[in-house]
Length: 476
Image 1 (tube, rainbow, N blue to C red):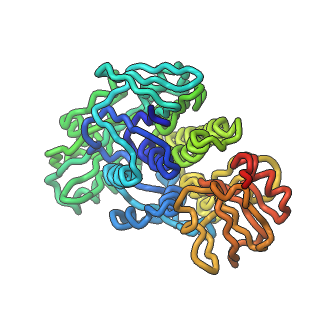
Image 2 (cartoon, rainbow, N blue to C red; image 1 turned 90 degrees about the horizontal axis):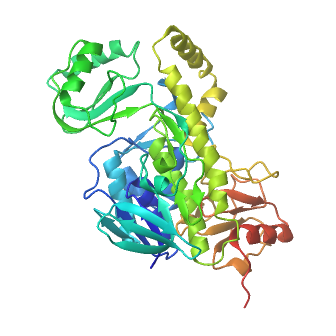
Image 3 (cartoon, one colour; image 1 turned 180 degrees about the horizontal axis):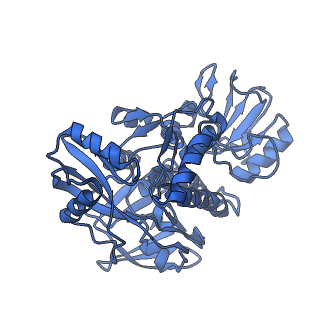
């Protein structure tokens, strides 16, 4: 019997598995595909996800395989300079193709002892007060204490537990793929620049080894969006919008996406949870989808591990829904707004011009960038200090950096007074006595995901918060 079954071996599932293994949780990942995906829908990590990789000691791997980028705003196709004073010590994203992201996270999960089984499709689920039983397509049954569906927008897990997925259906569709071209790069760039004056859902971008990323509006919405488009469809639509098909040939992969927006009504049903695209779908505007899923996993992993290891408070697992559902809803809403800005009608054109002028204001640009990169996500933990509910950015200490102290996925008490104690929670929380010129508070208590749950210097208040988030103190 496993502690947790993770259904889906994409970035969300692999990140979750790695987080669980940090706490010795017995976890197996079940992935329907026989081989890793070759599709590269997700094109990189935003600043908050970059921070997470640094918190877990994986950032160097991503930087070795990626290029840094800084694009402020990044909202509805409106590009602005990177804003000043964004609250992060990592003011950049990394351009990492999704297959590379999956490879790096897969390696990390395996290093930590995750069992990954490919070619395993879940077709049935049942749960009782002691655990969950997953039935696979080959007739195998697996038993675990908990199960998490990270199996994408058409999630079998979500359907099997009967969670509604309300939202708006697709009204437009876009073709996406990687392929070679015969046209001259300079000619392509000139044509693309002209087309994008009126159609921002169009793009031809050079990649590695002579392969180009092609994005072009489709001719309507396909009845079966699970069916990949053909190369002839790409040629037809390219000619319709650009007057040429650029001589596209030798496709590596072809796909389509729509502007549907949906969100699961509940992220938890008993012992079963939903994360990533299984919990929310939206257009890829702003490049938020892959990041949102990784951030779901980062929130859920330590909480689920705490429950498995027996020290979680009774309602800790419920905070996954109360914290991540609003975060998902925010992305669903901002992608709806962005799709409006990407329209070609006069109203959308006027609105885009207005937004562009507004984003010239530093404060507006910083707000938009904070939203897209998720560095401004704040969980509602009640009234208190302005840091409460925010994640703590990486601050320099006399003896290193904050994020270097968070590699093990434990809670952390950063104590600048030297007078506080977390002795009863030493098996779950690291007590670090150090000072930072960047931190103007006596002490902060951080959850394993880096969010602040207490600020102050009163030991009684601290003990209450330690009990709330990290369970009862141990004695002896």
